[in-house]
Length: 516
Image 1: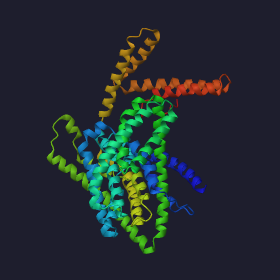
Image 2: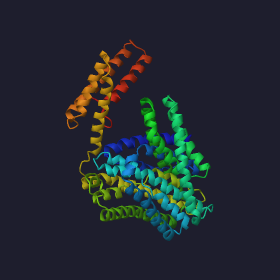
Image 3: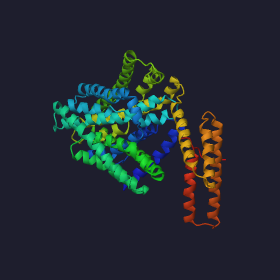
Image 4: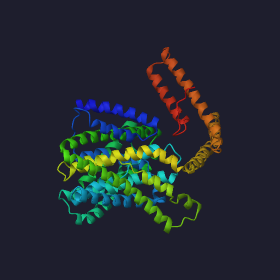
């Protein structure tokens, strides 16, 4: 019961920290990391042990699926060279460098040192996205960071699985290559098959709540089945997620999509909170087990790993950008726009904050794993250090780099909006009823605004008038319930209609509550 009460309190604190992060314009994971450290000093805080396999399935599977929905297949193809060099090259490079430090400095066995490198290698795009979304940075950078976040997890976790198996004696490192090849091929096939089966099930469910439950259950089931079959659960879930992310949304009703996205967003937020809670509680127990001299050595080792992780990413990113610019030509207008730049390399290199994946994978190490305490402490230091040092300095860095405004996505939205408005008008042109005329007039007004995206005043006025009218509808509905004209059942039905109208009237991503 004490643990349940503590969790509730921490969730409420996390909500307050999220609101504070928006006000301060810093990533909310940075504040969560500081809160997790503070938790380690709370007297009487419980010690929580979680099964390693449960930790991986519970935390990693939903996060990978959520990341897949934010990843564009077009961008994966378009920036494939940069993504391969980051998701594969940077992860392997960081793993090797950190493993060397762990072997030489902490005396870790080779396999355990490689496991440490794999744990701290993959950056998390969540913290970076929280800040980058406030600035008009080039789309190329945000697309690369999002794609990297999905793919580098698969690379790092595959290395982690093999190194952990080698450390506990279930597989030899020299036998790892055939294991990787077999697991990769089988996992890709299994992930695609599971994705197609899941799509068949989802298209036959109309209820929003049932659909969301099936998505969560399906995600965990895919992970568990892949693990039982001896495949890579990570690669399987990534392929599964990409398969359904591309197709499922268009086969779902609007009600189901809105409901599902909201639930997944909340679930990922809760998982982040719980992961940082576990970080604080485990750090407390680890420090308590270390002797006085051992504590100093462990903290020095953790600080060294943190510095190596930050420097390794910067060196790799700056290095590969220099090589690409030296040997590859960018001739066309589109190629010049997508060409890597020094400023872009600095930003991508600095967006190396570690997050949920690093935390959970460290926590998931078996209790008898060689060198577990210094490894977990180093992983926590990397998460805390990168989120605080890099996360909180990201906004000043963006101001210093002073990127030009990137309007490529705005142009795509404007062109697509005109096209879909015209499609609606074309289908309505064959209707002659008075209702069709009213609907056509609304679409024509929206198309005229869409055809002039530079006329921000007209678009804003149109949206504000719609929201202003909807606010009056909502006030009147409240009056009708207050004076007893309608009951709660009628009220909630009409309230839902107004809610959908308000969502349709508010520009995506830019809605502000109307206070007039």
